[in-house]
Image (cartoon, rainbow, N blue to C red; front, side, top):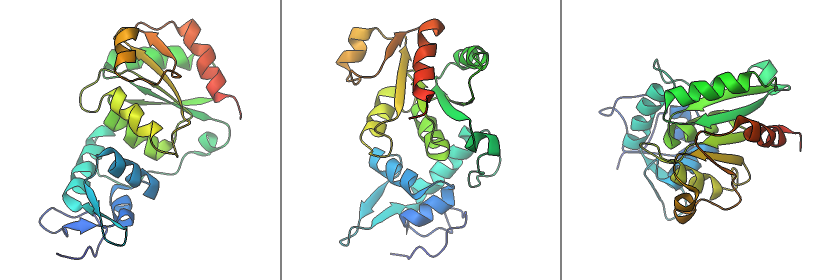
Length: 213
């Protein structure tokens, strides 16, 4: 088996077969903890050595690099840029996840008028949301459930199983009825709204989640 000797972006033909967690983080441009989250959720394929070290298949890393490039709007896959100064000092972060672009735009237009010191981040499915969560660490997640690729149920289970994200504030807005959602395993403590959600009822939850601890 070849030894992973480089972390620079490479083609499949040039890449070693496996890489370490640190190397995968540098190749994709996210934190070490985000790589662990993706391994645990099955986004990245990996195994553990006898000494307990993760070895991640380079093919799955390169695939994620390509998917990340597409998810964040094209262009070269580069490490996430540092947050702007106003985001670091005062602004909180809210991630909205929905596969309907019209709904995402509706949330954006409505919430931008609330006058809250918040940066709105958008994703179109659970997989893209995990990427955005790893990059930006939002304070609250508002998500649909029935989405292509990784749906909201799997995304939420992945987050709740990880100590770093288990306490993240989550609100679900779905076209599925509440009984169906409950039967499919949505945690009972997560606020649920049927589509179309009442913004008058949603706003207090958002404001409460953004209040300083």
